[in-house]
Length: 273
Image 1 (spheres, rainbow, N blue to C red):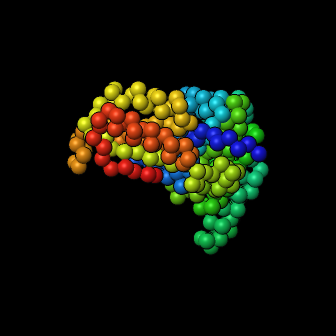
Image 2 (image 1 turned 180 degrees about the horizontal axis):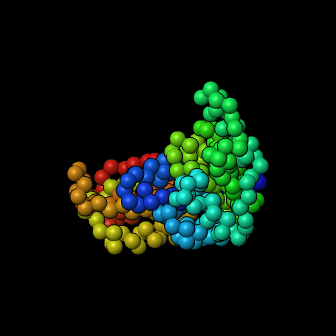
Image 3 (image 1 turned 120 degrees about the vertical axis):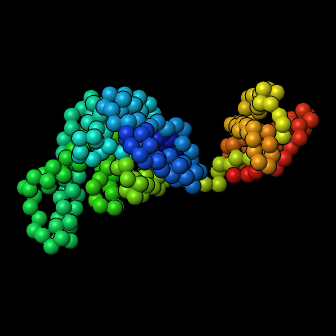
């Protein structure tokens, strides 16, 4: 079993996000889902409904080695391009996935029963709905607990896995959770990752950069710096901290505090996350 924690990425697709018709909810939620498991998001991209741009973004994702969640555009309307772009980026054909077909047909039978109708698989709209199960060859399905219409996953040449889920949060988020708690459960790091920081009053980042670089050079942690110029309580300040394994963080943070005191910096509250 590979225990090396991967980088996680997020692709959000849809003109409605870029036009402002809908506010994106996926980015903060995916960050929340990862953080709850001691994980973090390495990068995110938002792309409109443009086939060339979607294909290029997916080509990059498949060429890497990250775990990527892709939200949106997997329906069967004219503005849904993600399935086609995934196949193009992989250089494979599209085909109706047999398990997806079974799930979609089951959903159609359920809807017909709820309406008191007889399911007609040959009716044009029902035939069209099967397009939602047309995935790139080699794809595996992601179960959708909301309405049975599955998403799909594809493995890229670089070793990455891209998971494609609907744009609807009520469907996408449980599907992403099921992946994080299923095949990626062995990467959870609850209690094994920590951030410690301190508010530094009135300091300039440039003056503190040598200290930050020394800590990263001498300790296996990451240093972060969050400047603010108009905070209502602290005014101009920098939240300066370290993040990583708790034991390493504890040591590096003491070095940070000692270094800041050596500068004569005015220190405010400390925070642990």
